[in-house]
Length: 400
Image (cartoon, rainbow, N blue to C red):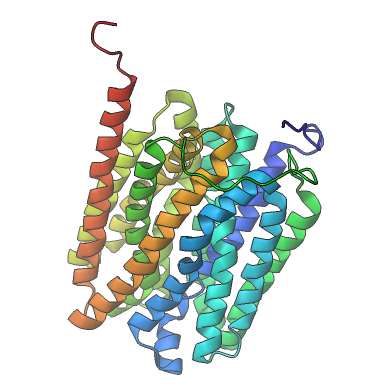
């Protein structure tokens, strides 16, 4: 049964909706990235090792492994508003639960926050795909994908300094307050386009009819993020071990995000104009893989390498999110992004602690950077396969 929109596009513009989604994912990014600036403090003040710190990052992603697909399905059926409010509420609650700083609250809080975050990153791109499909989707996804870089930059450059002034506990509480602000705006300023009517049955989620490309896109996205999120988790600690000051280490770790903020909207505009998708994935993955090797081998050129890494990073997210929204039926967009997020979370849950363990095992980050580069090269190869496969399927049968 079709339902008409409950809002007037003239009064609730798609650009305002984009701003609300941007703020929500910005708060998600700060919540996710509150750990990397505190790695040294967690190790020295709380006695954790690097593998345990990696586990704090991994626990945030664990719930999304199990909840992203059901969350996307529920969002398709119930509307993103209800699911979004619940997600932001859980993300704030989990962050506040970490305040005692003892092992059980730390791990439990990250897990609860991850329940909210794992579903939130499904519904926000779903909302944007629904509002912008067929008109400026690339530009919208480009702007949307500046939220995580902005959140990462804020975390890397200010939360470490804030820790020295106010301590670990207050930094965590400050992060929770940001999510509360996002929750408040989402509560009063967002309304679904097509609400769920009372008494309408919710069908069981089914993965049939999604097509083959969403799975391949999800694997590419996972490999890309395993490497990038491991870099952002341990980058400050790595550059510090290379002799850089805390401030410079934070700046270098966030440089890729600074560059991507400037470049991602332009990449989205180019996608709208020229239709580039798979090529951006292939080039971006290859460039990121090369710069990972250069950062690990020649850290004295870190500024140049991290700038190049930022250019590579800017090519991938808008292409991934646009392709994911376009590759599934309109009534299964939430489910499609659920698949994307599920594989993403599996990769982060396993990959980030692995890089931390490699660092503990080897005593340095060389093996970790080699692993990150390999994951990025693999994503680039799969992107080339995606291009070939899509072209092959679009070619007419011989004799027709």
